[in-house]
Image 1: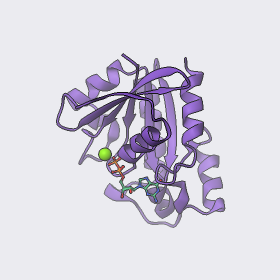
Image 2: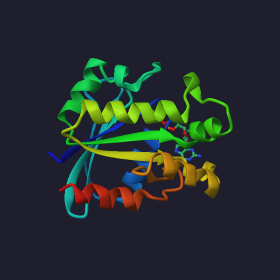
Image 3: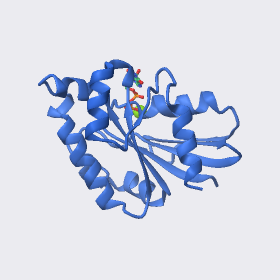
Length: 175
Ligand code: GDP
Ligand code: MG
């Protein structure tokens, strides 16, 4: 019944941790729906008086290309129904990339930027929130490079909860 919000991104970027962080901050959970699919978790919660239904799309796995992978039918349907798509990327991968290394599946800052472009093209009609998660692993200098390359990204640490309030504000802006 709440406004559907799909949380997408590669494995291990922190999608489930973010869902938990949102739940801890907002205790007004109205229901806890077991996913209709093996890997999808949905939780309803109220933020600023507005009901949201967060869909943790754990179905995106074992693929190099997030946009290809969201073609996985059930995840695709979830995203299709969502009004808001939250796309997370992992600052651990960014950090490696900035130091000439790569993250899982050879991912780099460039890969992430390409994926963001693809998601924008694929879902032009949806509200999109880009999240740089795990900012706790970056120095200020490294974080400044993220801002330079992906200026629209919200800086967040799902683990510490830093930035979760900014995400909530952003969601309310869409209403
Ligand atoms: P998912 O596969 O996208 O759902 O990712 P998870 O939520 O399961 O998190 C994957 C790993 O990243 C776990 O070990 C988390 O503890 C870790 N993690 C998640 N958020 C953060 C964060 O903000 N900072 C750090 N350093 N680690 C995080
Ligand atoms: Mg998960």
